[in-house]
Length: 533
Image (cartoon, rainbow, N blue to C red; front, side):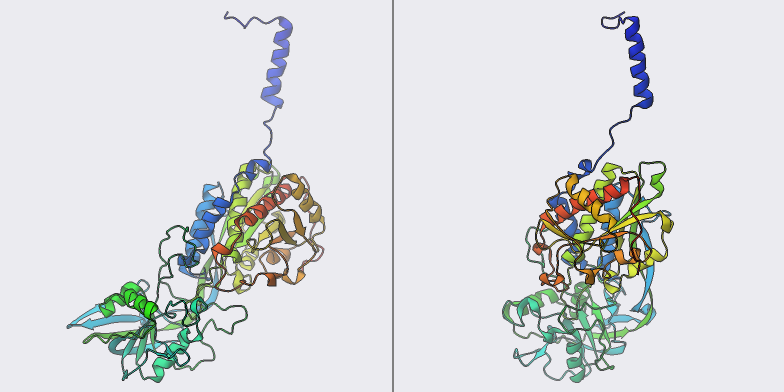
């Protein structure tokens, strides 16, 4: 026998007992939040934020191509973290919303030149414009941005234009000193332009979707993202403190027949580089027009109100306890925002609520590393900005029994304010969770020193946790700070990535991780809310 293997009989007994203990009674040390904390980094948060709030996502209106793009990123991140679909094989849970939508068979755009007619592709090169239904045919004219402004002494709608089809660029010249700079002048409003064209007896209009400036938030270190895709705009963004309309309500009913077209399509129609022409106007801030001969455009535009599909993204990570894995702690955030306004400005929604969505993804990934006893349900809600529609839809058709929901943690706007402070609503309704929150603060270093509770109750019904509260589910709402008015960029085009504090988002994410883990790992469930309505 090789050296070191000769045991005395007593040693054999002890060794046998020890081996039995190892094989039968010993368990590996359980994971703790510390095992997930290191995975939450400001670098990862910033990476997610560019994918959620970059200019090509055009404000993630519900629905829009930008919203779909964000949903794909969220799904990919949850899948890579080990989350599975909440039910069936899809991470998406669709619901519908009544909105204007294109009537494709009644939409048309064609160019006739030199005896040949070229039909443009619906949904790729052109889409209809809400409130601008009808048909028109006429010679094409390029009228720059289509602006008629007495205050700026700038008139691009001059001369005899009767019966023509105007090709105009959305927005206004990108000049640092004219037209109120990045704020955008009311003269850039789409509906005002169309009224001016109608009053000058044009037959129809084509509005060019112009790509946002590279790094529209002026941050040069952002990644190069794929450009936005052309898609019908069902609604238009409105801003805090500004009288704007999502659709041209209150304006004359007889607007020009009009379509929105891509830059590629505009170039084919005009036979020139429209972006280059727009850039020249940007620089000189002087009207510039083109009247090509023999280029005749025929267009038709039609929309109708109907049910449009929108999608929540919902995924689950199974708990480690054989019994408690059938119960769920929900972590959620709305991933939509308000889109683009009728002057072409993007509501980036970096803080509201790409910040909460990025935090939710980091927390979900960290929880998957800690293997708590209960299961985790990660939810990204659409159409929160339209009245909590996404969370209401999910709560009316849950993928699991309502009784299986132990608690819901919501993250909405966590990227601004003091880096070491966070406001948490829901304690008034769920006083038993205050002790959990205090334990979470002490469980490990998170960077959060001040937790504001029992304040800001006017906000309690304004985010997605409220839909779960109405089901008698205990909820906590993590928010950046009070009052909300401290954030002067809330619901404006200034809510951009470079104004976020990534360290603050990281700190909040770490506190949420601890909180979610405690609720998911405690033997006892938190009590039901004091009042659900």
